[in-house]
Image (cartoon, rainbow, N blue to C red; front, side):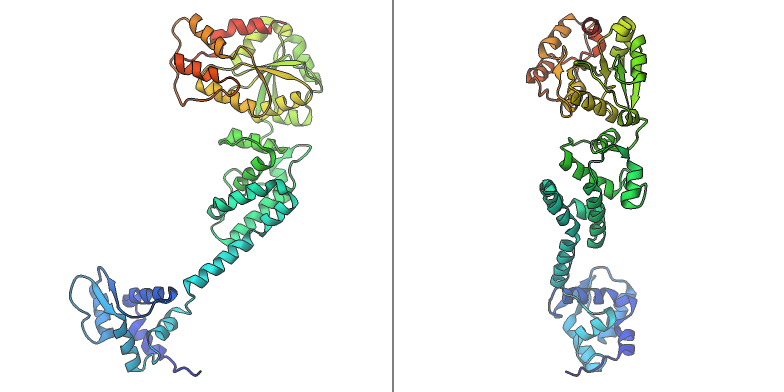
Length: 411
């Protein structure tokens, strides 16, 4: 069907100026929504120039009042009657602003684009069915949309994530930057805070069962759980009288503490383990054991607070070699959280770390211990311990019970 052409030059002079852009925006919005171009549209606080442009368009003042109100039927009639746009306001608006795609069609196209963006994830789940629940969760929770914003970026992000997860776990352990360079083409592609690192860490939790967490130490531990060493020299663990490498044997012979890096544990872990390894939270305990017992002290590992990637790697290795662990930490909420985190990685039995031990320490404490502070935590290995802390409301640090701990460590 032949259409009567729009007089575009006259149309731009009449309707295409900046002072009527608000009117065209409202017309286009109605067209996108499939609404008729009839009735009134208003501009709440028009400028004098916008009022003058509307008056020029209609050939009369559009009406009094603070708001500027224009009847779309009247604009349509002007365009048809003048011959500027014989087919009316719809043809004029598309001439000035381009073809209009209905919002419903736009949404359908966008939904289809997002569905196609998840293709790398679908293929990954077909290869690794264990990741199906995780894949469903990141779709429903919208994490990919938040990280990528557009379907095109999302597909690229999921493609990178799938490439990484297909290669995990890595054995023997490798440098994370080197792995990122080889797998994704850039040494910084999995740096902290990048969308790829965020999504890959989420997948690693599903792949390995690594507990949820936050912070740099947790991220190092999560990467290490699949054999990727984010920082293989600054993550360390303190030990006393462990053996199994020439360096450890030499230090144990003289009864001095050793500092093991994550790199050492990845490349040269101990070849042997004692049947029982004691584990403490604070360096003061390990230092005092070295002073008191030297080479006769029982083997001891110190977490130095929240367990580092190096500490977790060492304990996991010793557990694989057959070691059992006896653990003691501070009697406070932070101490319970550290113990719980450790328990999620390796099994351990309490070492004077029960409700009875806490009550005995409270009774013997002098001067009065400091009050408990912070958020209450659980003690899954013995619920009575958390209840006892709540009951007494004081914290007992490891240094407070150092004498009994040292007696246990005498070889």
